[in-house]
Length: 247
Length: 332
Image 1 (tube, chains in turn cyan, green):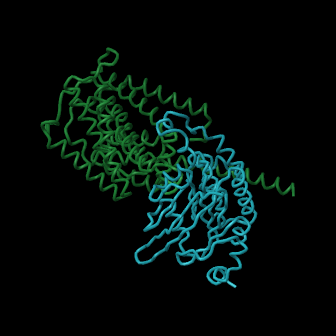
Image 2 (image 1 turned 60 degrees about the vertical axis):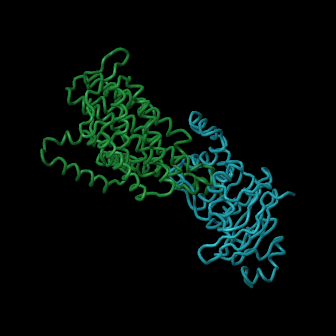
Image 3 (image 1 turned 90 degrees about the vertical axis):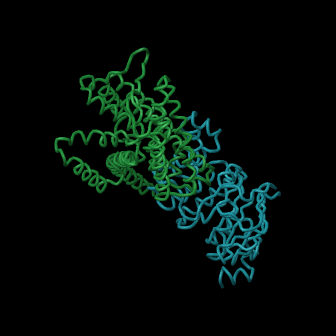
């Protein structure tokens, strides 16, 4: 399996604090990689550096072998990299369907053709399918701001898939989602991973979710990679137990 | 507005359009002037509503763009250019200047951006006043001709009112198209959550500049109609207070609502006329009315309507939910 994403020696300093301190790893095509670690260990900062939301202080990010360090988030998204956020990031005044159309529209045609073309950029059908896939049918016309927290999390994830991405970085998709909705979400993620051959990196604190979903798990602590391996290996690693999992 | 049935909405729209065409036929010169001014200011406010209401970029410079359009039209038409050509010049010029003014918005937001645009507004006023070789300085430009439309002179107030109304119709359709296009959606994304918008591939830089440029271009259109409407321009009408007036029209009507500028401009242009009988008190009454309105509804007049509709929708939705729940319980 070839690497979709190669991260080499990424560093990010905020003042005197090095939030990410020389992290290197790669993500293989079609895998679901878990990223765990205590709060403040640099997981989200690492995501932001990979996705161009922050400029890394050092290091390199390659997508399909091409250096993409320093590209803006919108440019990376056009190359097939998508994300969800730890905190809710939907467009509250737009309806669920409009949120999804918005999430896909910039992948349709040029700026000029989107001005003269159809209002929905030809995406209503695709949005409806995504709505059905994430079981949000009854809420399609509701403003996204009126949805429950868990439903907004589902919508957030659904939006990340609208552009047909190759690589999706999910930041705590399970946070604040109730157990039955969580198993729904896991089922959806696995289905998209298999059917669309999309590659995922998932930050998550819910160990059960991570262990059952991911093929490999990377553990971070204090800005560095502490361990990397299959879920069962990582779970037994004494350093991981010490730093994160607890006894 | 979604609470009305579609046929009712269309009927209402047609009635308003018919009234705007027929009723003014009996108006005197002054009444027609005020109504033409309403149409012109609505165009300028629609531009600001696009920049501020939809794309969320604060601007205190819309009056300056009305000025740029007015001077462009005054200078070109007094040199024998036809008005449509003058309007094109006004659009291109204010689009380009608006695009450049958008660059600060890529770095600063909210009240900081307001100050940048305020400085621009002052700058534009100084150019109108001091560059007399071009603008006529404090003496302004007089004898601005009115156009011939399909061979008909529009020197009389009624024909020129129809020119303004027709222009408003064209601008309204264009803005309606823009708002419902993917561009309109991207503008709203810019306003609601630029960070998320970026991660969805929305080029926030380009859309921000576009929002400024298009909004400013509409200010230019309004100016290009204002010049032949008054047939005389000097720098005074295009100072900061016009920008503030236009901002108030957008806010009072309801920022980010399509019909907001129509209502806002109506209040700003017509209300002072209706309150004229109170003589010296009309400005005070006007100020108090605006304050009370914004305390009651910070989202403007259309915000009140929107909330009423939303409350009705919520009721309907919770009824649906209750039905769904009772069905699920029956199944279990």
